[in-house]
Image (cartoon, rainbow, N blue to C red; front, side, top):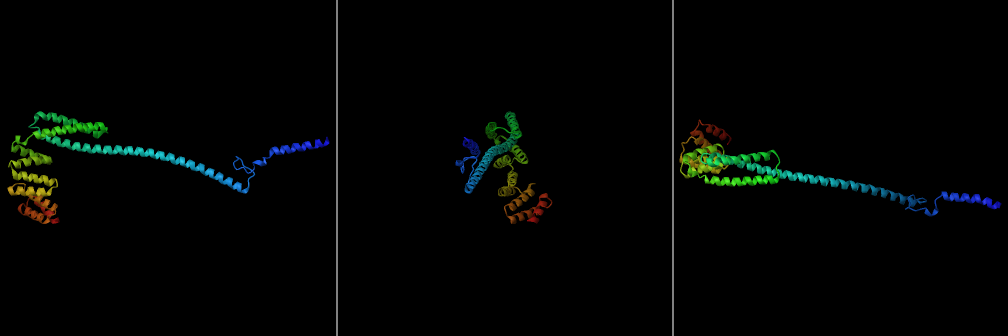
Length: 294
């Protein structure tokens, strides 16, 4: 009995200690949430594994950030491409508007010329021109969608086609040569060179003031930079009549035209002829200055 009493406390103490210490069968388990009893090599393996896991988490986070940035960049690129498309469309529209403005200006000039002989149609044409001008001003003042702009352009082209047809019916033969000559000079002063050229060519065909008409055709070619054509017209004019009031200008512009096409020797001869024949003229003063630089 005394023996049992002695062993009982010992057994209880041993059981309590066993409850406090981890089991020896779990030692060295690297997959355990809290591994214990590791050897030196196992501790190194565990440390490396933990470092790799931390690196993987960091890499995953960086990949997520990169993906988010890529999506943002793609979004911005789409916005930029959209604006570039709008800019190109706007620039194209502006070029078309400029062409239409030039055509309207030309049509207004033609309308003024026909006012005397086409009074019945004049008011109608002027009304259409004013409406087109208002639409052009509206386009210049604000952005207009493509559909509306295309409708405007179609309407304008239809009007221009009808107007050109109308212009062809306005035959110059219905006017006197004196009237045509007066209108031709007015067109020249307004720098409507294409129409003025047609009028002067008509006069030459009718043998009306051919020297003067050739001179004006030379001036038109000269101002448009067609120097060889200008020289030919000036030569024809001078051969028909060399006593006209415009001879100093004719000689000066002939010399300049020759200089522009690279014929300096001929240009020098014309400058000298101008100075000799018309020494007191403004053209001679210009010729002297140009001759010094030649």
